[in-house]
Image (tube, rainbow, N blue to C red):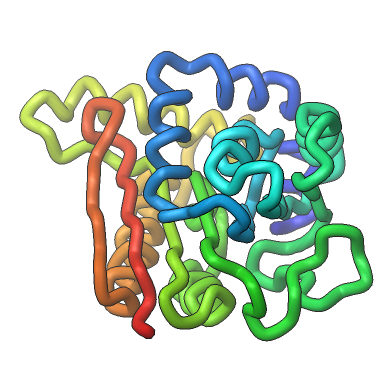
Length: 232
């Protein structure tokens, strides 16, 4: 993530947190994403790009007090909110790092064990559209969980439903407003088109890598959720 993007998301951390937790239907979606991780009590799950931590309680509910939840994000103001929200849970760790280069084996509290040892699932919600090479990130996450692990992606893209035109008009406005810099009125390439391309590529790569795949759509067909179990 570029420095300008970090500053942008850091500046809007409070509003982002409100949207992440209070948007109608979003809690149900986050609960569904946590369920798709196929977690059991005692498991370890890593969330790439955890933001303000809205998914972390749902993941902790799945792994129980004996499991481990690790959230990774690169933006400090966002992480501060995630840490504050999970301070009461001693098995939830929030680590500053890049989702494309997670702190594997780093000497940090809550750092990910090297070689995928003990990592049962990776979750990434509304993240791959921000990455330059989303398919490479998906490959890395699949390698991280290893055999019989699960990778789950949830991302927003233009709806394909019959009622899509008005929904997509709103979606495009949101994408433009949330793409730094927001002062730009015209883009050489529409950001929502590029976003669609990245998300389609990332979800396709997960389907290629996994032996068992679940595909769902939510929120008027805008949100795609793909969960894939890796081969033994």
